[in-house]
Length: 215
Image (cartoon, rainbow, N blue to C red):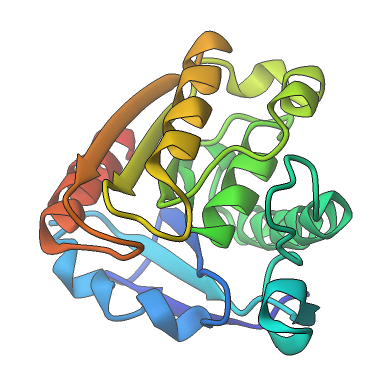
């Protein structure tokens, strides 16, 4: 089981957001945004997992927290790592449902690598969740996703957010992912901002509106 940080917006949470960080960060990365989201009376349990430590090729093999080993210019590189990480996050979902939160009150959110895992898992789950927040990220292996996706989450609400000046994941890669998701019938909301590979204040407002609409 992944180690994680747990926060509750209010006691007796009846919904859960599992939020996955990006390459080289950890679960603390998005912890400070909880009060910024201004989610009103929603009683939400936030789970911020720490990715496993692994050697990362683009950083000369240095070990850091990563959901997968990023292979530049590869559409399918890192697939086995991605599948393993998605299975680890599924364990977190199972833990939350065992604690009484139903699947349809769970949202998967992720930034960069974390967003890849959120999409990888969310579209393949055999029980319907509330939605996916995909920040500065992309859909890994659209062909295999089409083959493996589960009908339980057809037309799932997905918020995709990207910076127009992102040097890490070009906005065209994200836009291609958006078009693939729309083609497959998902309910994609798209927002882009004049920023790099980061999160901005305006974005938090849009994320908050999406979370409230899903929960």
